[in-house]
Image 1 (tube, helix red, strand yellow):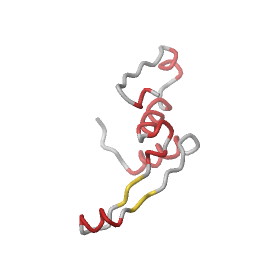
Image 2 (spheres, rainbow, N blue to C red; image 1 turned 135 degrees about the horizontal axis):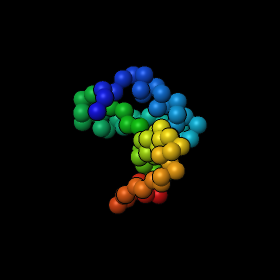
Image 3 (cartoon, helix red, strand yellow; image 1 turned 45 degrees about the horizontal axis):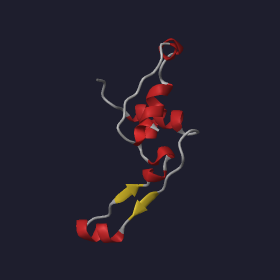
Image 4 (cartoon, helix red, strand yellow; image 1 turned 180 degrees about the horizontal axis):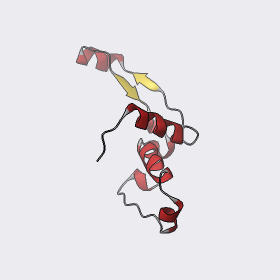
Length: 83
């Protein structure tokens, strides 16, 4: 597996930009106090299908060639990834 680079992340963000919902970065003061630090949570429960998995799945499928897609695509999930 190749090492992930900043350029890889930027390219993935561009691929999904017009397809993923914008989700906010959230703070929870009570958790910050317990942790003794500022923690931030990405509200991906507000994403399509209610989970972060949309971003990774869309990014992966969008990189398949026409020939690969013509062979079909099968995914397996026991949860909301299958939605």
